[in-house]
Length: 426
Image (cartoon, rainbow, N blue to C red):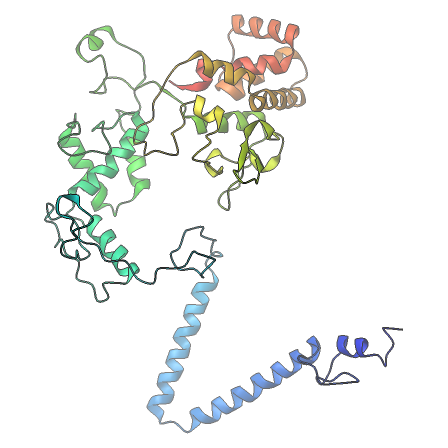
């Protein structure tokens, strides 16, 4: 038998001294290895204590205090949460085929009149001289060190006296909450950009944001608790005559949910949303790895639980955008899009009514309603609560109930998901 006690295989599986019945082999059994490691650690500790005993008193006290400090640090580290994986790109990698790390940055030269055939003097790592908050030329110990270059640029950009940096951040956050920034060209604060509608407010927000340590949480809280943000979006004829575009914020802007939020909202009301945060993304398409890869959005299994996470985690293909996301004005991933377009087209309504994702999630929403409510009126009432956060009026109750009786509860759910009240923030 191969597992007989006198066979080489048995001895290798129950190794004690590094030898089987035939020859010496590398490694020992796990139990014996643990004993050997324990014995080794004991001998090491004894030798260490003997060596320390020969040292002067001052040295022994220094070692003792250092060990105490280390133990305190270990205790502090032990109460911290487990570190999270960071998914990022790196310029340091092993050579693979024709791809190899450059080793150091290539030399950059001034090009007179843009002629690459007549390189001028070499350019050193530096920033824009037109801004005077810090010296433009970076004083680096190792000019070829990529880490030092990046750190120097980051410190130059985020310098407390660089007003453009702090204004740009608060303007983008304002744009996120109000649909339009105080400067409505968030990528251009120069001569080609727009002037701020509220320059004093922009500067005050920038300074306050900087003095609060650049805390975005503080900035979001400040804006959403402001009187300007808490206004209703109801129009006013007299004010509209003066400021039809609402640039001076006499009311709140009525905003439609962005494409990602629409998909997330549908997942949430259907009860299928996976709220897991972080980690690698997921594919919203079928994939065929060919000479020219094929991304097949029609092949997606909409019931795959891996695709039920927030849309921000989806894998984005720059060359082949998602048709549903594109229809709902999602940003073009192949371009720099500082401000998203907001359009109202028949295609959007047709997509929300007939896209396989919407149809299937409506069925899941209907199944959820049937579990949570016993009769049709209760189900319609619950549907309004989930989708629109309110009770239906008597007319709405009758209309949607009649629609559900004729076409089924999933069809009624599709009506609510496609309503303006579901898609707009009023």
